[in-house]
Length: 242
Image (cartoon, rainbow, N blue to C red; front, side, top):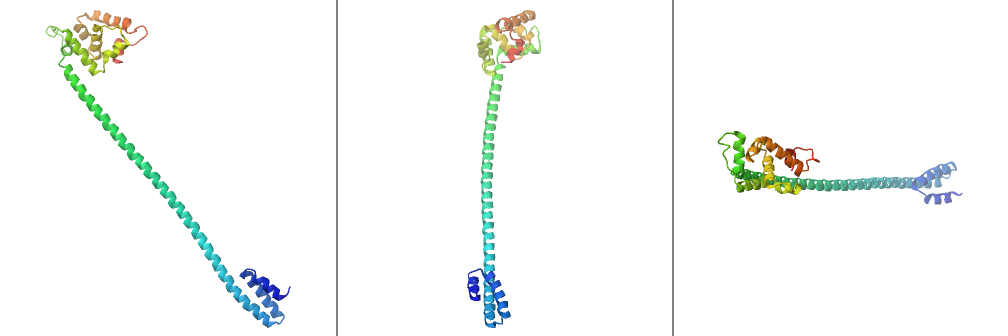
């Protein structure tokens, strides 16, 4: 290939490649003593060297810009991830606050209900202490003497006592008769006294029974009216289980 054609081909290639080619041609023409062309090749070599330098710098700038763009994308992704995490923490925090608020309301409601129940219980106990059946049972629990045995309980006083027990223990006799419908009014009186925790001796005195007679009465109530054959619990356990 002629030198002129080589030069044209080199002009179409990258500056770095052209630079190398011009340097080779420069030595070739010098060897051939064609100093004019050697000078031209040297000049072209210098021009392409400067072009190659500019291309190199351009490549560096492009590489730096690409690295910068990549870093910016990473930063954007990290910022977006941090923002999502922040939103998640805010949502979780809001849920925790809401849950704490609900628990606080429930606790206040529970405390309020307990206070109301306690207040109602105190009122009922105060009413019980005014009931003659209850007061008589308490006196007999403390001491059994001729004076404490001298009492007379009327029917309405028994009715008031049973009604108060129902208030204290949530309709106790209604639940009892719903489960054991054969129980009589007198049986229910015994059940209420047992529910209140009075001893067999005190209950037998209040019911005007001998202690042995009361034990047989209680056993008969359990066996005949409270499914005693199927229920192995004691009379007191059945009453206190309601």
